[in-house]
Image (cartoon, rainbow, N blue to C red; front, side, top):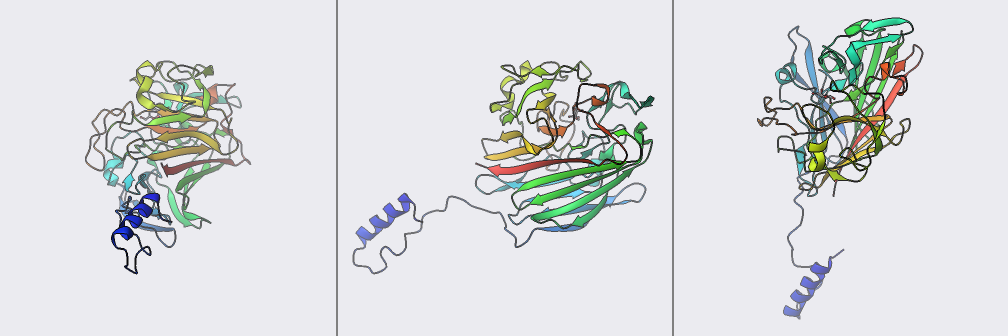
Length: 393
Ligand code: GLA
């Protein structure tokens, strides 16, 4: 269809060239609005490559998932880390929107869980201790007095088995890890699987499952650090965020929930309507060293896949939607990034260089009887799904 502009130009051209037979059949060429370097492919596909070797000789694989629209997700078997995620902006221009490194060495060094699978229990467990069926378990303590993100060697630091699997509508990779009884202090042999599917609708879908032979807490998530303007481009404080939650779990100075569910209404925690992330960040209650690092109680309550959050980046037009079956969402603004880590494009990652939206059960649930339970019993299957959807407007 011709646009109004094109028609006007055509008419003007016709008026000037009356008598020429070609007039009206074809508008004069007008500059195209979009340069679209997106490379659509015939079929979604997964390719495997080497990504280096661990000190003990274990080879690490890199899987590249490409969908029919040219969106690319790269995932390694070390930590199940999403190392790259290339999505289009409003003009179709691609950028890598997650923080990370180019080499395995980067991921083997100190870093704050960039892109990794988090488990056996994501977020904090107070004093690394809990009692289950009359037995008190003592976990590895790695965050002051508390246990964080699975301990000293959580699921972010283990090697997963990778397997390319068939997806109805996209490209998929299945990762499997057997966490032995007693690992980081947790009871039971836990078999965890994580299926990453890059759908042809520009979604990265993550399906988590787990089974155990002894009752154990489980709370799996992914710790991608997003910057929708592109990795290494600066602060995310201008991104606009909506979180579908009217309550959050307030925390003490060690970021352990008090047990209350407080309303967000009217205050700096309120993202029920889209707001710039930085608009009230200096008024956020207790979250050292400053910024958001809080669990939101999703209005959906968990269970069915529902919209949890939507983020819009004004300069690129990129939009990220998070859908999940989980009841909670940790909103974290990269407060501990302090410029000491240089990322894949050579840029130092400063405070607020990215945000995380970690779908989860609430922190310290195993010690909080009023929170939804994280306990998986033998014979049950843990099953959760989170979908990151990439749009542009
Ligand atoms: C989570 C925690 C934060 C921080 C980061 C990693 O989001 O809630 O406090 O530990 O992981 O640095």
